[in-house]
Length: 204
Ligand code: GRF
Image (cartoon, rainbow, N blue to C red; front, side, top):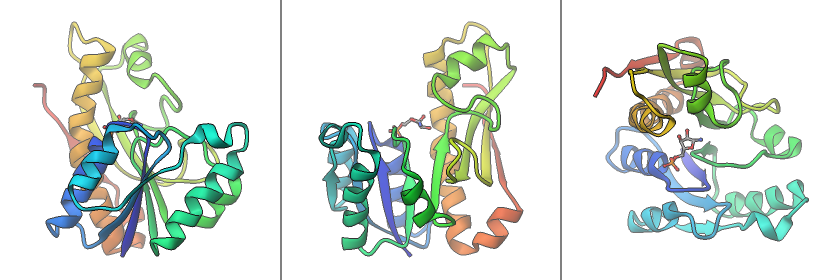
């Protein structure tokens, strides 16, 4: 299975996935990493692991979502990608792009879906008074942050938490959940859809 990873930022989830693939925990090969931000920190990290990297600056196709996605698609085609994994990819994708990859595209979202779709999830979970918070790996469908959930990571919300401290705790469980969910999906997508993974992180 040839995996293409889409990022926009620091790429810590991408690195956890690349490491999982390169150590054999995930039966797949990372063949390309594409960033929508040219100065994303994740690009150097991926290159450091020997994965080919590209930047498709979203500003070059400002207001033309499909144009941006076409440029990304061309790079995915060139790399012979079978499965697309979004890892901190801060773009809403065009319907045609999503349709093209339906059943073969995953995303991680920093909340226990279906709660807190969209942005600022950590602040919203704090504001709502949640006792637990977390992350979800799901298949990508046209509706934002929806699609079949393949696994969730749960962390406690602690007294004195800020959005930043909570985000850091969630990110740690993201790094465990995403490789586990991708490994299961690559092994058997039907079974992975039927039996979601649950990971719990204690305080610390
Ligand atoms: C993660 O929390 C991810 O869930 C969210 O953005 C963050 C990306 O972090 N969408 P990184 O780029 O993987 O370090």
